[in-house]
Image: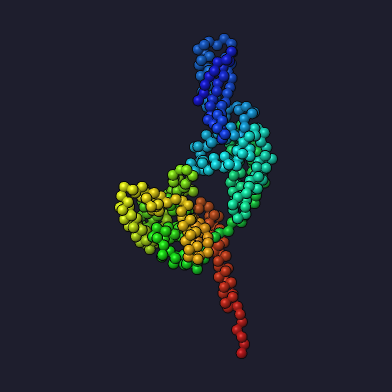
Length: 392
């Protein structure tokens, strides 16, 4: 909101833009001085026009900001403008990255004084942060994600004409090399072990794992399924949302990663399994009565609310350990789904469609996994049959 304060021969227009990351109120000011000979009415009309124009410029980040503005001050403007372009999940994720990494390292600097050298030092510092991971440091992919957020902030300031160059431009910064990503899958023997062990598990968990393998859905997409997404007649499952959890807030839903719905045909045996599970869930719902808090979710907590997105990972890890099966991430079930389809002759375009890949090159990684398994199979035959028979 803009306010006007009269001075001797001029007027001070102040616009409040909220608060920075340290809780300090952000204000932008400009001074307007009437021309000689203007009447009181002309002064009032022009002053109102200047107030509206200046406030609009401030809200759009286009106002002539004095050279003393710090990055922390501009960050508030950036997030104000980003509300309409970032998803709610990414908006909060960006805020956490800014609060924990970008602001402590660069927030105190004047926006105009930040150079590529500052950004490079920031990237280098990220690579030295100690974590509880196996390597003890942030993964290169994580460092790149944090840098991307910083890059987005500076690019925004550059586009609005607030700075002359983007100091975080990709051509100027040396980033850590990405580690070669290994596609983790369950081989045929391991998958058989998983499926056999599932027979002794609760029906909900059994259905969850079967659907993960059959559909190749991501974890958030699985826990985001509702019964209305499953057509038991056509055997088509619609993937149209992904559930996520932000600390301190309830479970929420967002669009799928690509923002598009997917339609996946499931086999008859899985339909029977789902029918059996739905009947079991209905009985449980009747027993709870008014205590039921659900909204027709497929995978639920005890009171009918949607399953936490982290639950499949935790349950799967315990399941593998309990049954003596070598540990792999829950996401490996998605990889396994893709490799199974490809190794059995399914067209790569169909596999990409089921997985929700927008580009075939993303699906190509599974082709290499299939080829690797095929090479291992060939080596097995080599070991079995390469020995020459003994001569009499």
